[in-house]
Length: 134
Image 1: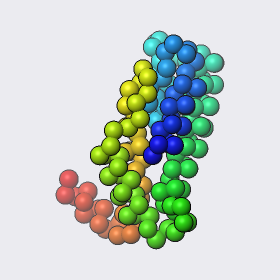
Image 2: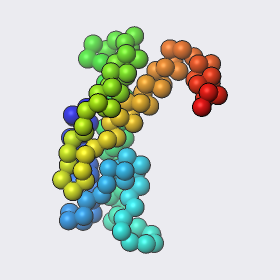
Image 3: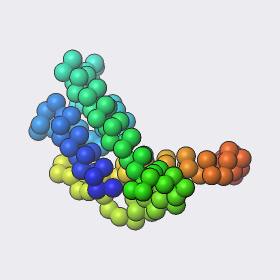
């Protein structure tokens, strides 16, 4: 969790075209720089956004592999590991970043991995029944 958050904090600061106005966690997570101005993004802003998307994609891919395979490379424990990561994300406060605030996207990534692993473990039918319930 901490390395993901540190990498995300670096992405937030490195991907901001204007150092005095950093982009938000939501902008990095969604891959879309919203900015303060109306209209189209400048070429420089588009370049920053594209670099940010690629960098964030690498961070998320690393986290997904770490949750799925762990330190030992064992995929059998992926679901319990994903549930533990989700619990940590829900229970602990994220890294506090100046100007941006507390980072929370770790929880969403852990939840997504939980759902992927749950679908693999229990099959499509369980998720379909859960969907009907809600």
